[in-house]
Image (cartoon, rainbow, N blue to C red):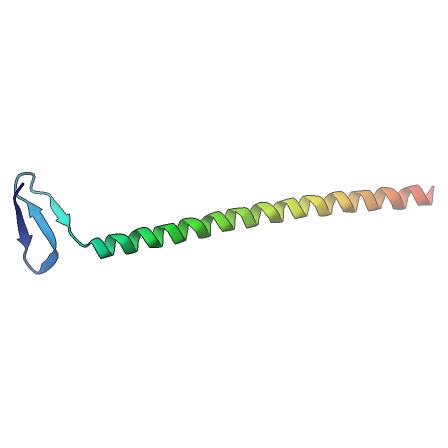
Length: 76
């Protein structure tokens, strides 16, 4: 395969056979992967936090209902 450097950008080359422009910036690619991994981790943490909050809300609702039942039983 033959490549030609792109004028005004040393990180891009053109494949002569397919006319595709290719990025040769490995450091930029690694940075992209790192940012993507961090974003995915944050998204997972947010999902887990929402799930825990929903469970806490459900538990609190059940506790409230039980307290109401206890109060009604004492009135009788």
